[in-house]
Image (tube, rainbow, N blue to C red; front, top):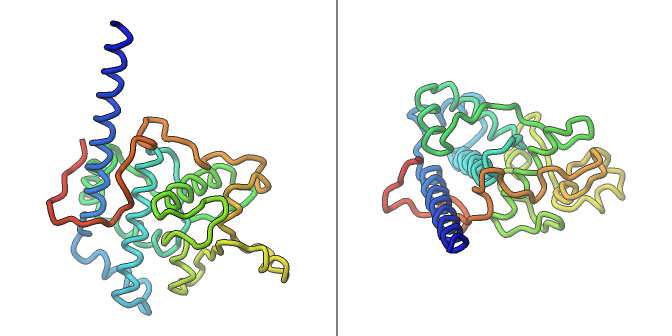
Length: 228
């Protein structure tokens, strides 16, 4: 009897986590940026078109979903373009605070964009976590990727100055002497820092693994709920 009650309670809690996660994902997908925010990004990068800034907006939301699905563990930003939009968003202090409360239930502090590197073990963990979640969301094999998730492709696609360039598979590039090239397949390797922390690990608060029923940027026609 005790086991049955425990099982029912556990199932109810997991159902609650699933509903909460789905509501927060829907809120992120449907969120409309504060007035003037995207225009500030265009001032920083005047060569960007409206289509380009729309891609960056989607990339930043993919980052936010990765953070949420990882169980709100430490994450690192892999894109300079998305990082620039994130930084501008934070300057809208009240809007950003409200967004974090509804999307995550807590404040998400900004960390600068970084790249996979042997001397940055903590950042590598955060990058691996984001890589894993973005790949899962877009049905990409995180170990042997045939393509890049949007967030990791942005800087090269949009020719962002001082941006971070990733390639899905670098075997041929490195065979031609492409030293220092960042490769999607490297996220599964321990050769950079002796470990693979963050790669494929479930979220500490149970958010990852209970399901969000698909990727992000889905339809928002039914109205978007806030977070708990």
